[in-house]
Length: 238
View (cartoon, rainbow, N blue to C red):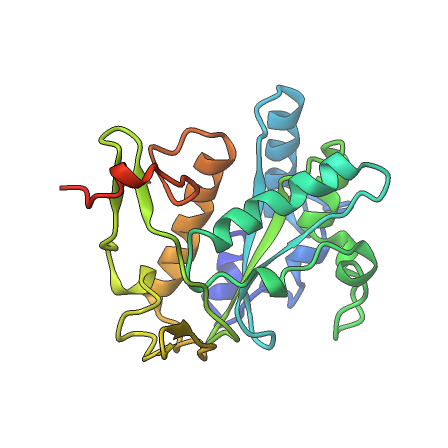
């Protein structure tokens, strides 16, 4: 949290002076935005040492429904553009409530002026992306306060070590067929269903899906939803 002084006064993104600190990354000063300056310097120091793999800024969103990601586009490099889409796509495969369709990676849309006439090109996502040689894994993760537009039905997990499919989810939040989401099966077909009211367990699951996505991205996830096992191995893990 980079604006604890503002949060203690009931504000969201603003500090004591009413400044939206996520517009101050271009040239933060020690006097006006000391936490932004410190965070920016720490991130760039890790980048220079070759230690920065991914940068994610977490935000709540008061208007746009759902949990989604804003990323940076690089029209000159198709490989980096593809890499940018990988983490959010993997999140959608690991979370019922992460909305891949609401993600946006277009600079012309992400870096326009906001309702306060402040340009989003000064956000951490935009500035850190540019200063880290367009690292494709630089994002803003947004979560609405109340609900989303759609949900995902997840594939069962596969335990690589025991070579068994795991059909039972750890919680109702991870099971699109649970009572949390209502009845979305009609004549054997999955039907569209409105998103539930968001809650701490759902937000927690979104955050967890980001970490699981990173394990899948690096091909080191021991229990993954991306694996299709041979038919003879499709037993429930004990």
